[in-house]
Amino acid sequence: MRVFVAGASGVIGLRLLPLLAERGHEVAGMTRTPAKAEALRRLGALPVVCDVFDRPALGEAVVDFAPYAVVSELTDLPDDRGQLQDFAAANARMRREGTRNLLDAAVAADVSRFLAQSIAWQLPGEWGAAVEELERTVLEAGGVALRYGRLYGPGTFYETELPEPPRVHVDEAAERTAGLLSAESGVVTITDL
Image 1 (cartoon, helix red, strand yellow):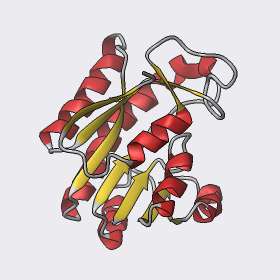
Image 2 (image 1 turned 90 degrees about the vertical axis):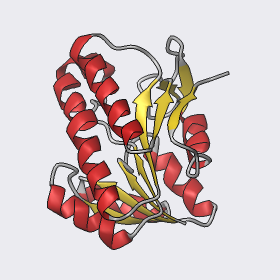
Image 3 (image 1 turned 120 degrees about the vertical axis):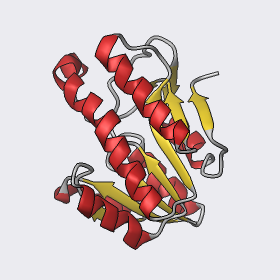
Image 4 (image 1 turned 180 degrees about the vertical axis):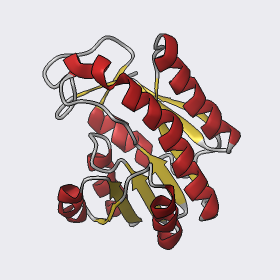
């Protein structure tokens, strides 16, 4: 099947692309950073350089690829977890507007399955409201909200230590996501058992 992965150069996306390719899927990997395109190609994906906030270009990219499934691993997070507060508004915008734009592009492409990254813990105030809006938008469209625990492992905020629960190793998160392409609409929690 054809799978379009937005946020493909993030910590889950980089692991998800080769898993999907190894399972025989044709994969498009979207990033907004042109310098990351070649790395996506090496992982088995057709690189798509596009900003999720450029609605016309995004719609064209998804429709042209004609995927069966769209997987949103979109975030706007810093490399240093000490800067999370500084990125809160940008990440909330990604959850709200970015998810809506990608979902609209998926509808225009007549996509059968839509999966979107969410979180398995509560956030306060506006941050939590953005998560709730993302999930509501995805579920109302018949999609799957993927509630990941706090990611740990290489490339995450917790490379050498365990975060507080709920948590999940980033490799496990990608593996479990790869197996959910045909999941029925609903919320799937992806955490350590």
